[in-house]
Length: 138
Length: 138
Length: 138
Length: 138
Image (cartoon, rainbow over all chains, first blue to last red):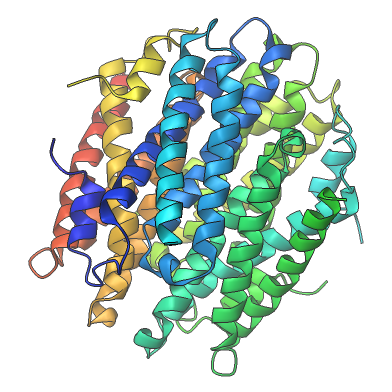
């Protein structure tokens, strides 16, 4: 597979992106973007399902996920984050919203394919962000 | 002073916004939005100052601040956040970026008025978010 | 009334923000932020109203409004925008989503106070953005 | 190649996403996300290049691009957009910022590989968004 555009640009970044594990960074960025995209569409799909009363918390979890993960991906794209104390807190927030979104969508996975697909990708992104977060603390 | 539009709508929200302290929520939202706005303009202003080498980290801190705080304000606007485990992590990330931004801009406060104004509002927003975060844990 | 933090920082921006009408810029930024905030909370409130089938388009219009207006406010905070061809298109998109959101929320204004408040502030922000857009073309 | 997660979820969306051309929608979303990601990293890389005076407009164009394109991708993920008058204006704003960003980064393409990669992906995304926009008007 060709390297992602993010990875290609990180590899030519004038700072070298410091000591960060680029493979873990690239995985976290790539999977988080997919999870955010899935959550945005899933929130919209949920609005059209019959039992909105059951879907409310799922919509909210999806919207929180998209908002916080998009902000985290941007911060991850900035070298500065890695020298500052904010990076672990930002990744921690991403892990939290991905976990809640994976949990809420999993509750509807047997009924709605969009919820199942979103749950799966959020779980993968949660793991990738957790691994990156752990590598920062090593 | 007239109540903010956010406070007016929160007061008529069908859920009542649960047990959250609405005064603290409103203060956190209002000051965070001002801090985000200040950080966005300050990042741009820094690009035009002479010593960019000295301003780089400040630009990055301002951009991180605007991205993460905007996402937090949206999540704060959703009732769901308060029942889920993601709310403390989201507020924690906001407190972290506001603190880093206040610190970085303070280093340039004697030279640049835009940095001084941004540092002051970020510090206020940091305090308001911290107070809201503490009230969640009570 | 004290000048907004945005206006205070714009007034000390090293570029002087070019030939832009600062009063109109400040009004557009301030009202747009309030409209975005209102739309975010209104989208959430709509999820708890009984007739979700009637509220779906309103939720979507509110979310589109918050997303596009927040992006426009950031772009408005950057001096560069005013020299580039993207500024009118960005403001045009903001005017469009504010108009659609004002229209959709107005349909529920007699039933739901949150929709009425959101409709009113979106209409004000739409006007402020339109006036700023027109001043760019003069 | 496996279909993107966005395409998979769009294909199971309860509304069927109306009459929109799903292949063009998927291309526009996928390329726009890559362009936004590239622009975010490129803006950061530019801060570390020696001649910041020459890079300022490029940083601003990259930041405008990331902000507006991210908002457009979210709106594209909502079925509602396609029934409302805001969709063409939102896509028009995305095309505008992608074009300006492609142009500004192209000016530095011979010197900086990150600018060259960003210019190329922005141009591709600009074309995909233009094609989607034209298909809406057919």
